[in-house]
Every structure is written in C-alpha cells, then in structure tokens.
Image (cartoon, rainbow over all chains, first blue to last red; front, side, top):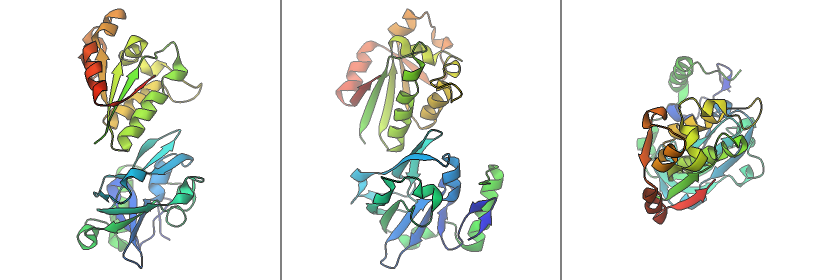
Length: 148
Length: 119
C-alpha cells in the first residue's frame, strides 16, 4: 500500500481523483469499482448505508454518474462511476455491513462491477501508478484533506 | 429521469421534523432523481435568512441549515408558497438565495408528474 497524507492509496488502481473513486480491471474483462479511503474519510467513517442503484443494473452508466449512494450522519451523496459501462452487479455484502467500505475500501468493500464500454478510452482519463498518486497527493494538499 | 416533489410543512417549532426531509432530498438527488422541495405552512420559515442555522434537531448535532445547504448543493430546487410567506410576514428579500416564489397552483402542477412526499 501507499500512504499519502494518512490515506491508503494503492498504486495499481485507476482513480477518478475529483470524485474519490477507483476502478480495477478484473480477469474476466469486468471492472470493479469503489470508493477510496479518502471518500470513506470524507463521508464520516461510520456509514449508515451504501445502496447500489438496483434500477441501473443491466443499464449503461456514464462516467461520473451515480452507481450507488452513501449515507452517514455527516454526509449523504452519490458514488460516481469512474468509467462508462453497463452496471453488472453491486456488492451484496454492503447491505448488512456498509462499513466494509471504510474498513477495506479496495477489498471486501468494493461497491459495484461494471462491464466497460470503452476501457481503453476511459482509462486515459484516470490517474494510476506513481504519476497518478502524485496527482492525487496534489489534490489532497489543495483541498487540505488527510485521513489521519 | 424520475422526478420527486417534497412538500415541506414542518418548521422551527418542530426541529426534529426538519432535517430528514432535506436529507431525503439530498439522497434522491444523489440517486439522480430531479428533486423539488415546495415550502408551505411553517416550512417557509426555514427559508428565512439565518433561521435554519438556529434550529437543531439534536442537541450537539448539526443545525438544519447544514442539511438545507447540502440539499441546495446537491441541486435540489427550492420553491416557496407565496401565500405562506404572507402568513409569516416574510418578503421575498427576507428569504435565502436560490428560492423561487410560486403560487399554490404550481404545487398541483408539479404533483401531477412527480412522486410526492409531505413532511
């Protein structure tokens, strides 16, 4: 893991920095998406619910549009899709334990899986690797965000 | 896109009824619904400049003003019933920015094509 201002941000993920969401291509061509540790911190770290948009399953969701919602006593808002594609499924485990997202944001706390419409095109708009994390660090510094 | 209308009648006399409608409005906006809040009866008082900041649903918690701002930031449209502003002797300039004054008939027109909830 890479620690940036106290936030765990793995180098191998693809980030839509402005929205604090990540994408990870899986073996079967599906892309798994979720919230970053930064988003978990900003949402108050004790979530009341994470609800995948059931109506959107089987439908194409555009990059930046909502695939799920997050509720806490401090925050309510969307989880935007990092890429455009068909929403295949949500993580059913979140219904009973929404705080999987805060405890394990890149593992058990994944939010949805998307069949990408144009992964090669979309990934160019996402930040990844050492350069991507440097850009993410700049964003956190500009907004004065830390996870500590 | 689906549309939602939230009719807000609760006001500063019932603080515990004042945060959730804004929270639900923000949530609906996050789910990509187009959300309108129509303020009437005592709900209109929450739109008076400075008022929502003084109403606390829970001691030590966030004021209603924070929930209201979250809803505005999420893109929720705020409409105030003109007759209710007269009930409370409020002039348009007494209300916070971003509120549009409309007649009661507008509420019925909106309700015709929206799922409607009243608080």
